[in-house]
Structures are given as C-alpha cells and as structure tokens.
Amino acid sequence: MTIDYLHPQEKFLRTIDIKTLLPQQPPFVMVGKLTFFDARKTITETLISAENIFTNAGTFSASGLIENIAQTCAARIGYVNQYVLQRGIQIGFIGAIRNLDIYRLPKVGERITTIVEVMEEVFGMTLAKAQVVCDEEVLVTAEMKIAVKEEERK
Image 1 (spheres, rainbow, N blue to C red):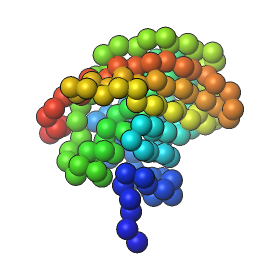
Image 2: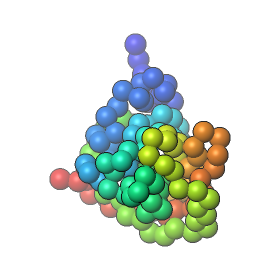
Image 3: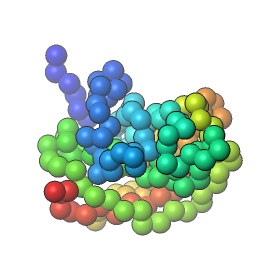
Image 4: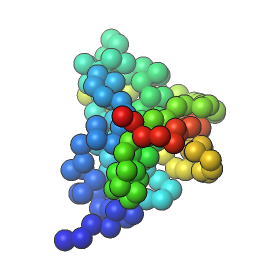
C-alpha cells in the first residue's frame, strides 16, 4: 500500500508518534496526535491530563493553549520535513500572536482539537490562524506568526 504523504489518511497520521515531529520533548509536549494534514490545514487532538505542566487546579492554562497552537504549527513543519522533504526537524519560534481570544480554558479529561490554517508562508515565516475546540465549543481563536530556522536540529 502506497501512502500519499501530501494527502494522508487520518488512520496513517494517528500512527505517527507526535514526538518524532516536534523539537519539544516531554514534559513539554502539548499536542497528542496529528489527525489531519494538507498543504493549508493541520489538525491535532490532545487529551488534557492532570500531569501536564500547564495544568493547575484541574484546568489547562492559557499559556498551555498558546503552546498547543505553536506545537500544532511545529507538527505541521515536522510532518512536511520528515515525510514530504525527508529531512530533519527544524526549530521554530513564536514571532507574534495577534487577535488572541480565549473563551474558556479546558479541564482535565477534556479532549481538545486544534486547527491551524496557513494564511501565508514566505522566507521561513508562517502566518497561521488557529482555533481550539472542545466538542463543538470554540475555546480559543488566534493568529500566530512562526519563524523557522533553516538549519535542522542536531
């Protein structure tokens, strides 16, 4: 069976260990599974756990949600590098966050879905809009600018 890495099926994506796509490693991994990828959109799914370093008093923090969005962007870059370009992981940095609206913080045990859509990519910079949902409820909306270093992580 041949896999179309530019249009992968969710079943294949769920088999990928997310840590292989990210420069971050435990305990700083804020995304669970990659569930969708195409040229413009990436979706991750994350179960909020009590052990997460951004969880306090049963609630996942705003900082954790921002990092979750950034790591969904990183998972996209990691997927492209590993499966499409067949190269190593690149380090990225949050360049800017705009129009951040947090409507509710998720609780321990809730599963959040993070949707990142690329609006523009140029010169190692990606501008994306993001939405974090739990069930059908929108928890967060934001725009994020990510800068990516050209060299690969050692």
